[in-house]
Image (cartoon, rainbow, N blue to C red; front, side):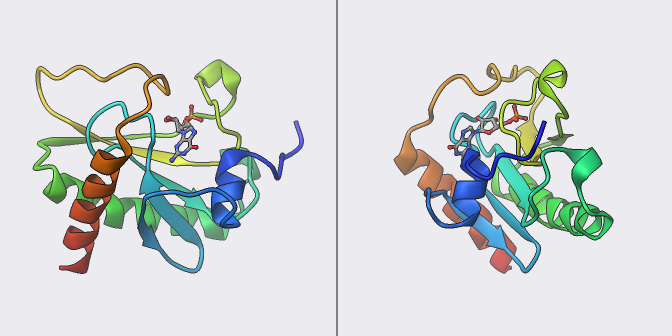
Amino acid sequence: MAYDPNNIFAKILRGEAPCFKVYEDEMTLSFMDVMPQAEGHTLVIPKFPAENLFDLDPDFVAAQAKTTKIVAAAVKRAFDAPGIMIAQLNGPAAGQTVFHFHTHIIPRSAGIDLALHARKLADFDLLKKHAERIKAELAD
Ligand code: 5GP
């Protein structure tokens, strides 16, 4: 399947669609997932038109990993999360629904089940507050 430049994350990268941004550098962008599976669910995407891991330029694989580590540490602190799940889905058979490569950062706590994947839109005021919490940790 060819990369679709009109997928929602490509639009976010071009500034054609909004997002609750937490971090950005030359090669990556990180923002809140609008249908979070847990409070603090954050995404990291490369500024590279790859549908999945197999299409991603190796330099961007490295940049993606670096940003994921930085943002995951901030999410962990911001939500006082005992655990952080990192997930990355490749292909519809794996459950991928947006076809621009991305990594999920999801806070986990014992006894709190994950919400269903990409089902329920969160309150945007709450997402904005969550983004502010993560940004405050990144600024420290
Ligand atoms: P995937 O299933 O491809 O691994 O994950 C796609 C993720 O993107 C889902 O967790 C879904 O909630 C999230 N998502 C879908 N549309 C949007 C959107 O317009 N904005 C943001 N920020 N997240 C989205």
